[in-house]
Length: 166
Image (cartoon, rainbow, N blue to C red; front, side, top):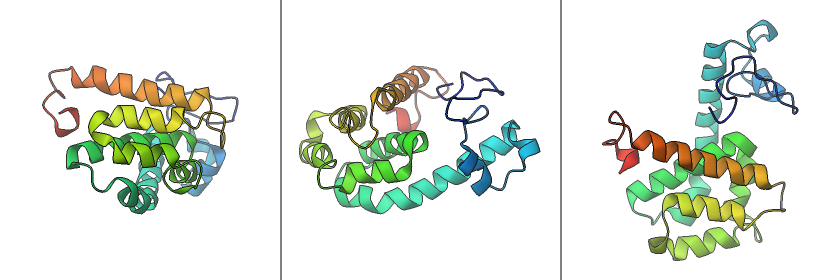
């Protein structure tokens, strides 16, 4: 819903296509033929491949910075950062964890994590880097939208008791 408002034929100004708003390079990396660029199952398959690749790339720097968090909080934060990587690229999220300047908020939140929820930490990492490395209001809105959508889904009977919603 956040990517395309559920529209199969959504097309962004940045030339991202489909329900999951995949860039031309992502579609090419996933070897999706142009005739299938708009196909929902092809889009989902490609998005899952990208998420898996991003998770493998982000796990080591995430563990180095936030590996000491309680498991549930660490899982929630990693998921939120992984979703942010889908929006803006894994290398940009990795820079939030490792770059000398951009990681300063992450360092602070890692030390003071008891005072903040996973959503607060993800939001803060982006907020405190607005204007740097193409982190703008769209990135901030994306984190907020994901958090709001997660909270709404966790209020449903079907998901309320899942580990992610605890």
